[in-house]
Length: 227
Image (tube, rainbow, N blue to C red; front, side, top):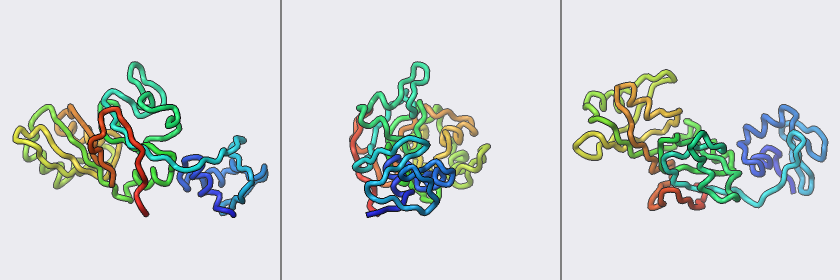
């Protein structure tokens, strides 16, 4: 039984197939110590190595949902006094990669996986995965500014930012923000461009996944969406 090499690499290394193809194109991948080309297939029992390291087969992909607390960074290394989110997970999950990021001051739903194709499909804008956040501001959002953000969009240095806003209460400081992009600190930068500070940003939904009753700092194994 054989399978395409890029699919094999994506599965066992947690890459996207595009990333696997890049490795193959660069000559970094060998099958039974022999160089191969794009489109190659790997047979059962053959050895595959990448940059001189043997690929160790695994049983299946893993998908986690984590309720990240504020103060944790979405990286493998601790940054100053701020712990990494991996300190919340047992070692068996430390090889998983975050699907997108939540910055240190943000909390809520963060997905982690070793499935590169899944991560690509969840984060690339062309797949239009909706994300929903609870956002609190330091001051009441003026109606004109609400209209600018939701109807026209705000021009940022990396392009326009248009967010869907739903008011939570009458003080106009608490909002449900819905978006399908995921640029670095986009929500914070959008409000900051109009003079507001985001004092709380908590993600509740990402695509078909919802935080539900998952406690802060807790995680659970989830299933990928059905094709």
